[in-house]
Length: 115
Length: 113
Image (cartoon, rainbow over all chains, first blue to last red):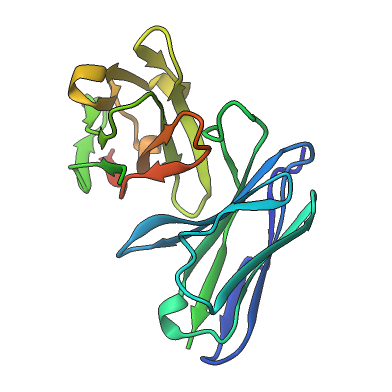
């Protein structure tokens, strides 16, 4: 199994540009999670999906952030327009267990730098 | 709101020293508990988990954790650390049925050879 795949691994962009992060969960997993990791705030859950449906987006910082999961094997996190304070590592994770989401499998992350 | 506290932000140990990292959570209901590890430059990996049963849980690489319900704690331990244990350790809590993890802020462990 290839694990959770994220692309790109690194992204450098200028303030105001649109950024799209991509995630392919592990095949057969029901739940998908987007996290942001910064030194100041640690690991924050942004949004999660179950069976492609967004369940909780209360962690999305503001309207500039949006996430979609058009099918079971693909999700995107979009920031438009991007700002320097969005610089962080963004992780995608997936989980197979309906009983508990806890055993999550994380991707390698996308390190985003907004200049 | 549910929260997870990891009181030690940075820990420095010599090889063979014993390790204990604290984790406390605030929630009165039934919870599932986890420790994740993030090695330098890598993604998070599950170290161990507690759902129910024996409150002493054993994980990979010689780690263990003990769930003490009365203290709302789930401390991570290892009797003898190695240089390769240098990493950041995250405690996480899930309210059963809510399908959402809350992570602590992490503890950076540096093991000197």
